[in-house]
Image (cartoon, rainbow, N blue to C red):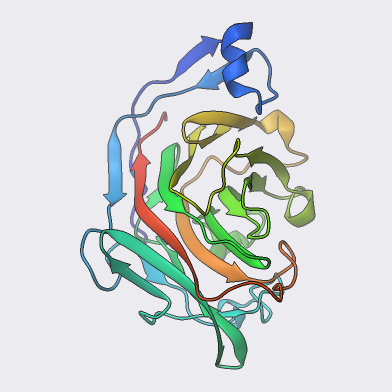
Length: 283
């Protein structure tokens, strides 16, 4: 039986942006009126403060090359890694979650890594979902912090919906992408926007990636900078983001999104996660 999503009850604030305030969000090309919310009702957090394996009361390992999940080899994206639950690929140490991609022959794959989810354990409808992460780098690395609709086993993807809070091409360490996928706007037709970190790189320090999500909008943030808002009017199909979703953290290697691994990409490469937090949002 699925764990019910955290119930939500809180406030949202509509702010009218003046031209001066809009300069703070130059990456966000939206109307002058925009939903901006502040959620403070903490529903869940994992601070990764106990060394060892992940907390399996919260997280699930996804192990394999995708075929055990009913997908083609490569998780449906021509990825090259085999996901494991070994400490070589995933562990908690010194207050951080380590997800490490390695170049090694394992179960027929040339690379290993890890992918974990909160499916059936922590599922949320609306609110703020955020994580503080330092990303790896190198051609062909594909780390992500994202969500899938909890009804995926009943309706499959993309009808279940997908929210990519952060995905990133390792060869472009100053740029990330926030996206939604749904029926009629999935894969290469996802509704997406890039955010470029000013004069910095995502692999040299920690940054906070998050969404704030209500019944008719999803706002995308990096370090509290609002860079995109997606609403039902922005999608070419059904809006499927009014249900519980679960969280996924992973580092893929290769695949359609990032292309082949570069000859100069150094392994191992690790994504470090300081915390994951979920705040309740509006009903």
